[in-house]
Image (cartoon, rainbow, N blue to C red; front, side, top):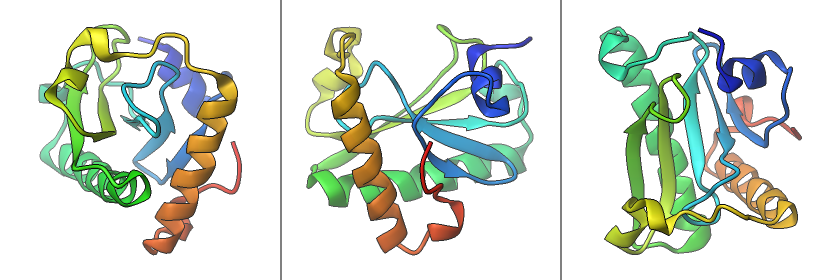
Length: 143
């Protein structure tokens, strides 16, 4: 299974990366629920979250937690939304976004025409916030 996420991880497709480590990457989705909406994706190609070892799912959740804290601080959101998915792209991914409403979990809450400049701004802001949280070792300078 080679998905678009595998191509992004290998550098064959572009993305706005905000986190990279030996087990996973995180980048902004091009169809956000809110500014800063990030996908946490394992480097390993795996379709279903129930098929990953405990250590990998635990690592992905720790990274999602760090990103959620940074999003909440940067956008002063009430909560951070989290959803595990894999239907549209058959590669496990965890959605994390600053959240103010349960409406954001509905597919109608997705911005399918986000402006590239807005995505670029959100990436810059989230990278900077992650650095202030002490995660500079995993935050790339640019895409």
